[in-house]
Length: 447
Image (tube, rainbow, N blue to C red; front, side):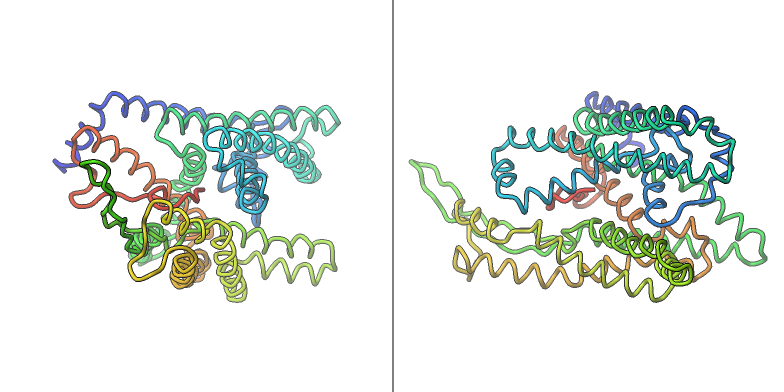
């Protein structure tokens, strides 16, 4: 406890770090206040009464927006349009040569890509906002008092407000990255997820406290949740270190190189993206099933929306494993790493530079990606397993899946930023031994 208090004093004594923390908290407070401001023309009481919990892709958006989607707030779409645009631009930099060239231009190329991402975000937000208005109109059919007017002005004003809200949230994320603790977009998503934790926690506690002997089971659930969090930390930080030697160079009276370092290859270099892609792919048949016969459509929807269904878990796991290999192949380029090592006079002991090095790194990556993909798939189906074990549906989402991986990853990144500031000023780190490693340490894949 004494060590913790001293660490908090050290953090607060650093003026720059204190300013970053306060600025980040201010941005988060503004975001949470905006999440409770209803759209113009919406009856907040009716929309709150209608909040019966979304499922499928709508439930995913609602979880990332901290309930803003189901509350019909001005931040209903949250940061998801920007995330979609960023993922698309990231794939373009891998698949399109002109974008690859732009990415290699350094700071100027990065600014161009960021600008294109913002333009694409506006287009995606307008489309999603129009769809969201249609979603609200469908809800209003059963609740006539929910929308004061469903005319064209309501559609136009709502689309403008939602687009402005998303752009404002995107701006806050960029400001948190520049002037705050960093990872602004990921931090906003995490805050939206964590905002639902207290309510879901109390619901689970209330459900267990009404039955005799269930409090002990609730304590066991919390212990299992802590163990799962520890496992997710190992999955996020797990790396395979490949030894790399650098040739000695003598320039005048000085010697350069000759050091032995390690090339860290992440076990889960794809991050949370395979789970998001898998959920999006699985939701497509449910949408198609709605246009088929009622019996077939209902069967498909029951199978692919019930996370506790064994067949859903099997299909979901296969899709996650497949997307893990696919996304890793897209973002990880062994040839580029081999060329960089060769240009810097680095080599892997016992492996020839050039193509043999690329083949060697690729083979290692394939070996460690398979267990990483299996672990990622297991984390993805943990909420369904928790439901089968008696955990409420809302609280089970924190036992794994996208929510838990994003929360753990963002918290590790934030702690790493704070620890870096402490070490730069000769203070002790946050841990007695070793340093905190976030997703930034050895991977550029973020969420």
